Image (cartoon, rainbow, N blue to C red; front, side, top):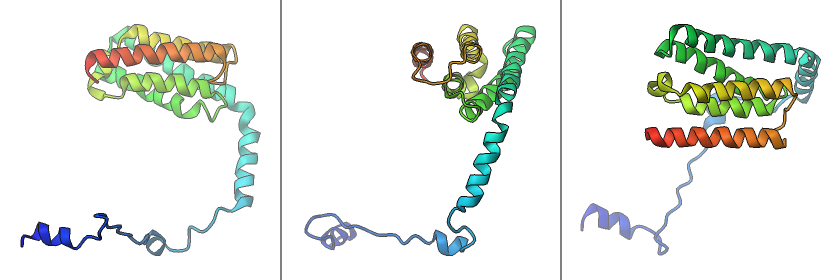
Length: 173
């Protein structure tokens, strides 16, 4: 009898055998990562709330960096290096938009990042789509459109994401 037949005959009548692997992570890591300290979490949330008055300034700083990266592309052309800088600043906004209470900015920046995720395709990203994303981010902040469910925000993101999807399909990405 072959090995495959032997293994098959060892299976229960249902033909399925469940293997339960023990979770040994806790034993390996140790007890130092106990439960979350509710007091520490409350202090962190309070500190973040105290900093929230600075969010608009910090968000504008990030937008300025993205605009500077775009201006650099205008001056030097879209190269691997200039595209990388633009991508990094878009990725920063993707991560910080929600923190700065602008989830719509996170979504728009996420769409821009999605278009440029493939490093080999960054330098060929269509500038009209890059500019549309940058304009949408600036408009959202300018008009204080924060929520992704806002009618204008929904329309903007739907159109941008659709265009990015079409572009990526055309490129086979």
